Length: 436
Ligand SMILES: [Zn+2]
Ligand SMILES: [Zn+2]
Image (tube, rainbow, N blue to C red; front, top):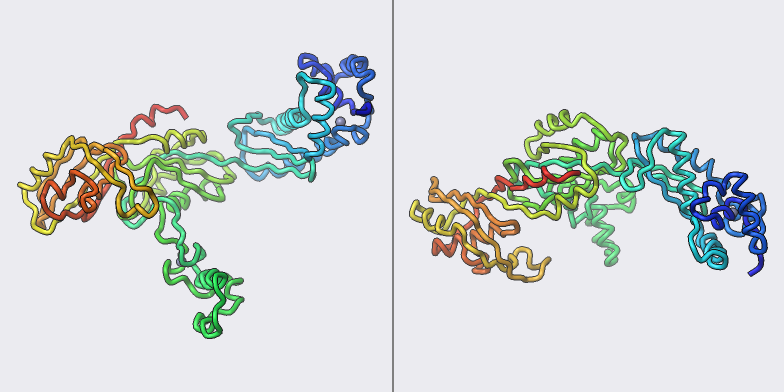
């Protein structure tokens, strides 16, 4: 390899020992580097003549300016920086580094990042925090583009689902692909097979219907695009406008079925708010707003760090349920006694038939710690069940054709059905002790 020419920046970065890097950028430092470089590389003042960077960093000040002006659109106190260079640049750097310095050096990327961080901190008076930042500054020195984006905001709380018929996360209608229009369905179907003229006429759709969003609503979801309304959307409806966020994704500890309510203190969640314009808001006011919602409420809101999602999602909590049980005969106080005898039972549960299409058939053991029952009107029983995390409660009641043993059905020696089910308590007290 011929003696490369390097700009003073690149030379200082590569040849200065770590302790003297700071000096390397000073004039005194440069005069010390020069002798070390003699016979290895030539220093040119001008970056464009530099073998490694070819003047890539010349755009740094203007890119920082551009990113800073973008960052004025949202609130932030801490920021992270990342930058990218062309592969060719990084390869040229590696070439010089391996030839001349098998040891330590500061890479172009790290050097650019710390220069940028310094500039932003100074200009905006904000703190650089690479791991927990409010704003992400990204610099692409190949395309000479910079972007500043708000990082997601994480809100922990508990949701209470007062109504049945809500799923936890958005569940898009498969008929229309979530668009709510028949046009979308029509064109998706047409991709699979060409439609005949008469079919097209029957659909009463012209190609323009797709462009204008489709004039005709999807029959399956009544135009909503969703199979069911969701807890996620209800929470997003309140939190998104409050923080000026572009989206809301719900992370929760387990989920109840669409037809199961979640009462009591609710279920722990972390709502991930995408691209929030604000990072603080009156959470008391938010809870008041939730209080007006007859279906889904969120309580105990607080802002947490991203890793709190793991604490919430990877924890398994004992739960208490209330169920109304009916059978193919009238149930009595005597039956209630039979149910109570199931307290402490170790259940053998095969994967429920209703989810077998999605999951492999497995046998799991779960404990019903405590169960009480009382006869209520209509020949039914009201059950209160405290069970281990992951117990299939509906199956425990109706036995899933004997796939769960023992069961309420087996204890009653008749066919029992779960008329309704509510989660009434989730024992997640430990979450309060987790530092966010
Ligand atoms: Zn250079
Ligand atoms: Zn639909």
